[in-house]
Amino acid sequence: MSNTANPIWSILGAGAIGSLWACYAQRSGHNTELIFRDHSSLAAYRQHGGIRFTANGQTDLLNIAARCPATIAAPIQQLPITTKAQQTLTALAAIAEYIQPDASLVLLQNGLGIAEQVQQQFPKAQLFKASTTEGAYRPSRFAVVHAGRGQTLIGSADNKADATAQSLSFAPLTVSPSDNIDAVLWRKLAINCAINPLTVIHRCRNGELLDKPEALAQIASVVEEILQLSKILNLDQDLANLHEQVLDVARATANNRSSMLQDIESGKETEIEAITGYLCRLAAEQGLRLPANQHLLDDVQRISLQNRV
Image: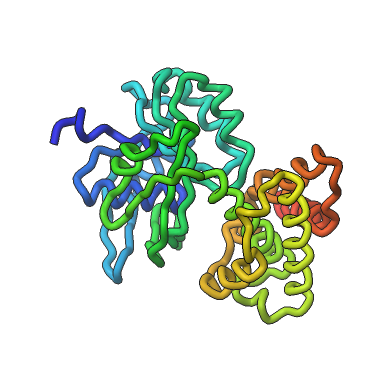
């Protein structure tokens, strides 16, 4: 297949999801590269010899092409962005000179509020927003485990995501176009707000929240506030049976340690500002207070700051 038919995907961010897509792209014979934050990260990756990829009980070391801002030599036309939300703008600024004006940018991360800022920074780019429930985690820095199959949806303002969805489908990963990706992302945000901060507060796996009466009461309060805001925004139709779905997700991912909890445990900055923070800011714009969510936001910020001091 020619490079025209098989464009190179430069994946910004080598976390669990970025590494997962890069590994399956390489296995499928597609052109891909990982873009690391800096030269020291790139050097460490090269010394390791690649990504140690585990799927279906089999582990392989995949030597995926990699770059950092200082070593990029070619224009970037296709760019999935899998960094943490709070790192996105800084990471993009470091490679902005290589991103083509009409590049395809795919946001595949938790949280909301970043897409508008990215589009402002790259006004002529084709911006796609995506959501995935593929289960992946990193047992170590340059390793990724595909722990469970999920669904990946992608959409854009003009609802023309079919070609990009097909181009990003690296077997067995299947990306499907969505004609209402904003509704998908709003529901995902709501579920993340109800689970992730509480796993930090209670220092537990997702499923363990279901065994804690205090956590269950907090989930109910968080959900009720989200539904109040959603009604004001005329988005409540996108959150049917939200409380039940939150509990279902906690059960389905019972053994998972949320990415927010993992960040706390490793002393990293969390995505709380792009998740609960975004929700509280949106409510404030509507003159609505969300005390349960605000309390979780304040607590996670305090714990995060203590862990990084």
